[in-house]
Image (cartoon, rainbow, N blue to C red):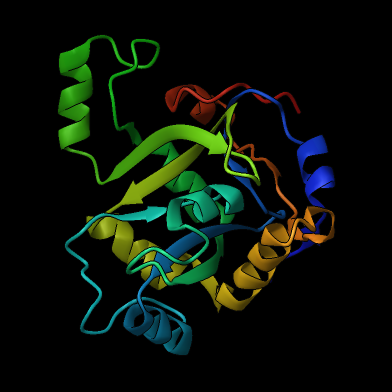
Length: 215
């Protein structure tokens, strides 16, 4: 599933600062990441969707399009209950639909007319978008921000039943890359080929306070 490139190539093609959805994508699909404990990951891999006794559909689940942000968040698959990193290829039309209905996790005056307007939308939304600092390969904070997208309720069900195309457990690959990093061989690392993502409707970027992308 993953298309790989060197870290230097990866950085060369990404803006140095701003808010971007950083992801691997093609004309029909986009890859997002999630990390889970063994039982949830095993079920997802076997069934190519989420479920089983340990998966809670009543909780918001977070999609992380950026590989390196996922690595920082999960501690390279070493944090408790995040020991398995799953790469999930989903339909672009579904991802864009999620973005089009998303509400920011915090108030942005550029997006909402006032705090009450934001709060009302936030409390009634099944989709939240949150911008967080992007950390580079070495764990250093950058001037770039990456998005994570939370979904719950009917949207989560639709993601699971209609929009997921493929699920792959990439934990062994993750550990191989971390070993190279720890051995000071970062020039040998191969990370996912990612670029700044533009939805089919560019006005969506304004709705989530993303940096404008010119096509």
